[in-house]
Amino acid sequence: MTYTPTEQANIDAIYRFMEAEAARDFETMYRFTAPDCVSYGPGGMVTRADAYDDVFFASLESLRRSIIDVAADGDTAVFRYRAEMVLRPSGKSASLDGATWARMRGDSSWRHGDWARRGRPPTAPAEGGKVMTYTPTEQANIDAMYRFMEAEAVQDWDTVYQFIAPDCVNYSPTGVVRGHEEMHRFDAAMFAGLQSWRRTILDIVADGDAVVFRWRAEARLRPSGKQAVWEALSWVRMKDGQIIEGWQYFDSAEVRRQLRPQKEAAL
Image (tube, rainbow, N blue to C red; front, side, top):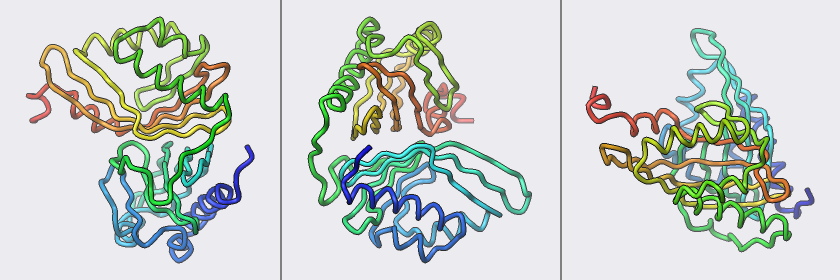
């Protein structure tokens, strides 16, 4: 992709932040974190990064995050990463994949961060945000995502699958689903337990064949009528107006907690 100088600077800042994080070079890390930065993640909202890092890194022998994919669009930088860590004092190794949606300021410091599987960032653009100009293909891909969501909400599967390639592969915390046949089985099982379902796009960017969007899901369970609400991030690859590959990031533990029967959840 060809980026503006500011977008390229923001991407470079993300890589330099990761390198400093691996070395626990906090002085360099905080050069890329605005003093009033707010970060949202599975552990809650963080307004003082230094206090959070003191606790977080005390439990780790090492941490390295490797960027798998990155996209920039105006003041937004989004990236998927793999984290590899060694825990203290056990020495146990752990690895996980995550995604971050960050708003950047003109000096390439982070203003807002939505970390991986849960977040509640402001829906309004960050200060200095702007309406982006997309290529015809990028705009068509964005439009396809909105039409996909509308069709999904009314379970119009003929329309839904018009936007999914027959050999599409989807990765999520619940597992990997390949192709239309597996996806039909997954959807049948999921929607059998739902009275209603709607996903609302909170923010979206397109970059070449990639579309990345944050969304809020609102579900009503069957037969209890219990409501569940959560937020997530999707990163999809598009070709000829269809999704060919997708990655879903959300707090699966929080979703399971909300979806449990009330008596079980109280235990």
